[in-house]
Figure 1 (cartoon, rainbow, N blue to C red):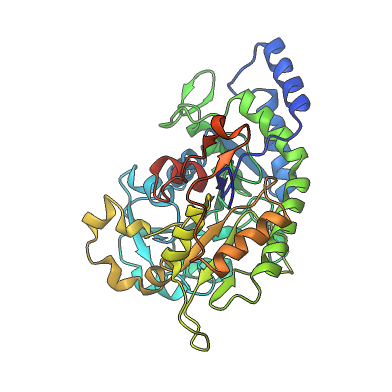
Figure 2 (cartoon, rainbow, N blue to C red; figure 1 turned 30 degrees about the vertical axis):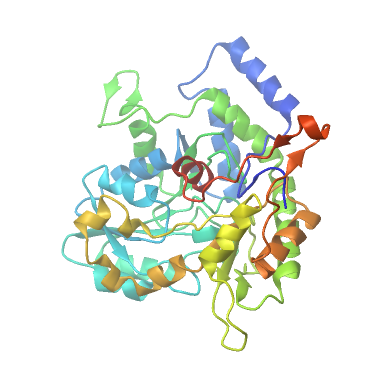
Length: 410
């Protein structure tokens, strides 16, 4: 149905001329990294946009998670959802911390406070909540548990830049929150991330840790890494921030078009956003469920296969759950017993293409495939030119391609 692959997320470029002007300024200044003008300006603008005291820019979202965990002095066991991108757990395990997987709420897809309580042991030092799909985690309930047991609470807000919870910008909850600014995010620095916090001491520790533990030119005051964001990446981020409202408007329009196109498809439900909160609408997520009132229809994997057959590279995020990936499936071979909701949700989710390359007509055609996945794609399609010179369109990529998975998800 489509002559070129439609990806879940393609990078936005923003105002190319504005970005290149900033690059010229960087080259003229000869200040390419090490907390230069662009990084400081980006941190200031992000903090202002979110409404927090501090933004600490880092080289990636994963690096930001690692630095935040170290700055909070997490150790032993830390409770996390399995239904998230692997980096949430990897950032802990990389530092010798054991991620303990707790189940999610099957309706919100976020960490279940009741499941968290069941996982607390004498070795537990913290909780990492995730604002999955940008929809707020149960911040108050998790904070109450953290306060009751004397635990540190932080949030992985990789999906949630620009979103709100209870009218406040995400970034204001827990001890700190961590953002990803990967190329496919609504707001991007190409590669990058940040820690947002209202804790002065935590921000100071994080700034030292991202720069080898240095606080000034006299030497290190703690163990640190090279996790700094470069000036070029910050320049892209400043440009991206200027076009963020336009990106969100496109995403929101696409979301509404999907809602219209899929509203009457039996067994297919578009994951809703709270109209009272601000959202970046970065992800269009559908759930494929059996409808007892309707005749049997294709399951999630059959629909996924059909979409790929038509060059629509929908994805089964974050299937099958981090607990089922290595090394965690070897460390916790019986984790499935405590994660029934995670397993159920993982089997029914699809994420659909959105962004500036997707329009209403495209969405209608994608919806037609979902509505009737048994209609096969043409056996052979061609791109332009005379019949003898036409080149066959390559087949769509397999949905489990590792490189595509990593590029699109985080």
